[in-house]
Image 1 (cartoon, rainbow, N blue to C red):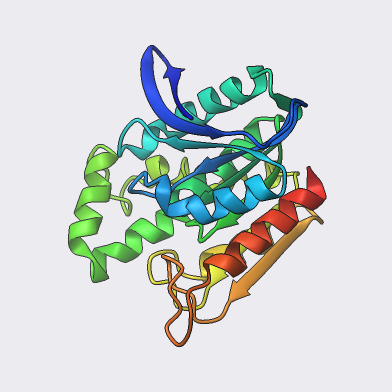
Image 2 (image 1 turned 180 degrees about the horizontal axis):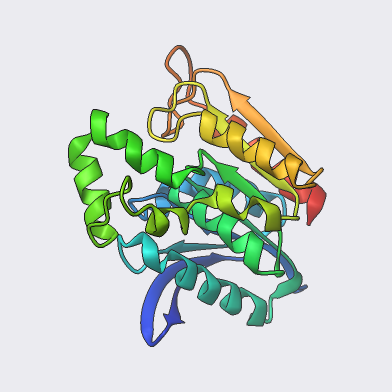
Length: 241
C-alpha cells in the first residue's frame, strides 16, 4: 500500500508491503538509487516478501543526497512504530545511492541489524573526483549539489557522505554486491569497503562479485542478474535478522 512518511514537516512517498499473517514481521527498508525508482527494485522487494519480510520501499523527497540520512531516519521511525513490524528485526537493503545511505545509517542507528548493499559508491570523494575527467557534466551537477565546493580544494562535504569513512562504526552483518562491468559504481568501491570493514573488526562482512554485471543488473554476455542479486540479499538478511 502507498504510504506518506512525515520528514521534518514534509511528506515522503513510500510503499509498505506486508506478508500474510497477523504476527509482527521482520522488516527491510528498501532504498532505491539516484532516480528514486521504487519499481526498479521490485524484484528484490518480491523476493523479500516471499521470504516473510515486510518491505518499506521509499522514494526520497528529492534528488539532493544531503537529505537522504534524514529521509531514512524517518522511514526507520515509521517501521519501528508500526504495529505489524517487529522493531527488533529491521534490516536495510539498497542500490547505489540507497546502498550509500544504508551503510551510513548502520553506523549511526542501532535499529539496523543487517545490510544488503548492492553496487554501492563507498569512496564518494574519489568518485566525484574521477567524474571530472570522464563525465564532466555529471561532475558539474554533483559539485552544484554540494554548494559548488571543488573536491580538490574542499573535500569535506564529500567525505561526510562517503560510506567508507563510517567503516569503523559499522558493526552489523554487511553484504556488498558488486559487478565487474559496473561503470557507475566500479567494483573497487565494494572491495575497499570490504577491506575497511574487516580491518575495523567486522567479521560478518561478505563481498559477492557478479561477473559481467553492470550497474542496472544487465549482464554483457548473458541474462540479467536480478534473480541472482535478489537471492544473495534475501539469504544474507534471512540469516542475520
